Each structure stands twice: as structure tokens, then as C-alpha cells.
Image 1 (cartoon, rainbow, N blue to C red):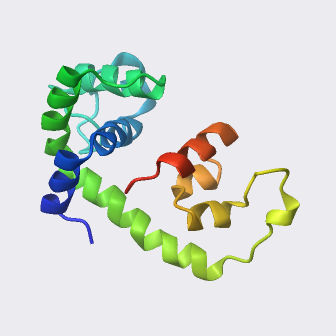
Image 2: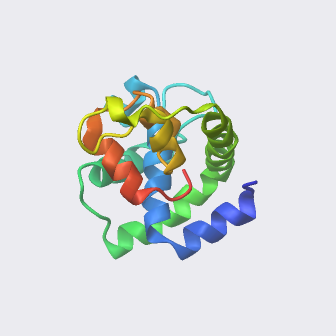
Image 3: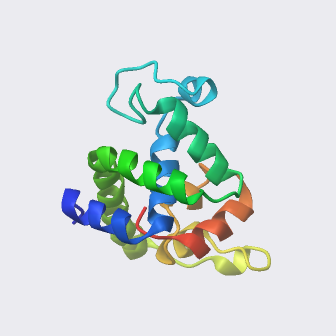
Length: 152
């Protein structure tokens, strides 16, 4: 079970976890908020108004395949820790879904081309269920999720 202490320890120890956390919170923003780099809805999800512009710029930089500078990483780490509740929610939801999907999974990978794995096998290998079951764009992201899967 993920909690505030465990999330913050992970963020302190792992720069990749910081970048994944930034993107995770960014993905929770509404589409309008993503495009405007602001917070428009007081829904307790995504970045707060004070952080939205800067953290969205970091998230887009990461999503475009560029890492963060040392300075951006320090600032991003300090800011993303404020979102520990959302990060716990995401990590705990993933942990709860994975065993259910694995238990119900009957492998059909032979129906997929080449290296492509069926959604159940992707989840079993650590891919977030949203990615495996089609709420993400394309196979490249799925492979990236397999290769870079941390805790959310």
C-alpha cells in the first residue's frame, strides 16, 4: 500500500520516478487545462493553480523525450511532492487492479502481431491498465511503459 512517506522516499531516491510522477499528474488535468497550461477546475485532480504553468511545461518536455536539467529536477521534485495524495491514489489503484486483471486473464497473445502483447499480458508485465486497454496512443507508448514502468 502506498502512503505519503513511501511516495516521498521514492521521489527523493529516483529521478525517473519524479518525471513519471510529473507526467502522471499532468495526465489527470482536463484537456482544456492541458492546452491552456492553467488550472480551471477546482476538482482536486491535476496540478494546482500555482504550479500548473511550470509543471505542465516540465510534463510536456518529458513527454517529448527530453529529460530535465538538474535545476528543473530539483524544483520539479519539490513541487511534485505536494501531490502525494493523488500519486498514492494512482499507485494504489494500479496495485489493486493488477491482481484482478491477472487472475481473470486468459492469454491470447498468439492473436497479436510480432512483439505485440495482449492487454492482459501487458498489465502482467507492469504496463498501466489505461495504456494496455487502449486509452493511450499506440504501441510505442506501450513499449515505453514496459521499459520504464516504475510504480505508476
